[in-house]
Image (cartoon, rainbow, N blue to C red; front, top):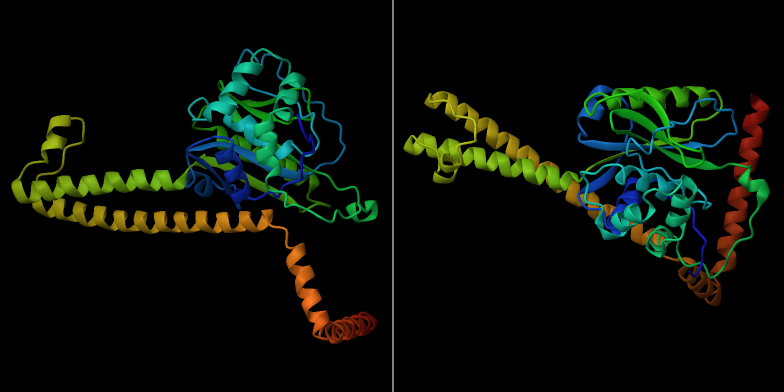
Length: 350
């Protein structure tokens, strides 16, 4: 099965979106959440699930595991591979949303592991060459492997968990737990406020000595959403113009018979046309922003995969050959010394 190592990956929407796409999932993206208020969540709908990153702390959790989760159709896998929690949280979300196109690789994984215990499902994820290679693709080649310094690590370990609704209930999916935790009964319309409350409560438990949190939502691809909404607005404009000019809807619209009727008053129609044009202009701007964001994500991910050590080595070698390296080193040492002296003087004056 080759190298079983799983690298640590950055909690970033561009990284997670590309992870999903390269695993074969279509029509979704990840978006970072900066607020859990109703308006912020509403603006991102449809939301398929939430993924929360926090610094793991050993604690007692007396909440019972949902005994009937398999009967309810919940896909849950234990995390048995070190550093796999980010990808496992993503897989947990998309495999529990039947409306999503998860692609052949994940569809086969879900079918193959049906009926298996949670630990075996975790092993199946860890043994998937495709999933592991996609996950590890965000680790640049390293000709020089730095020695691990336990003092620098400070014992910090970060962990990802997922929140999503399945079968009329809101679940917390944590691969380090023996099974999913049922948080509340819910519907597709009211699960988000309940999930937001659960995340807020968890943050509150750690807030006294911890500020390193990250929350992302798995949502519909915004390019797809804006393109669909734009097509609807352009079609509405066509209908309005046709009625204003000819007094009747376009042939295609008349034949379908399933669209809401337009008002007969010309002034009202003109106002509706103006609104539709303004909305189409807004959607075009939003679509352009999303396309630009995808290009930026692609550039950032390319840099994440790039090993810059050879570039730095060649640059330092060239500076040394020209006799310019040592003066730069001396200048940096003096600047650092001056900074330390200024910090000491500032500390002494307080």
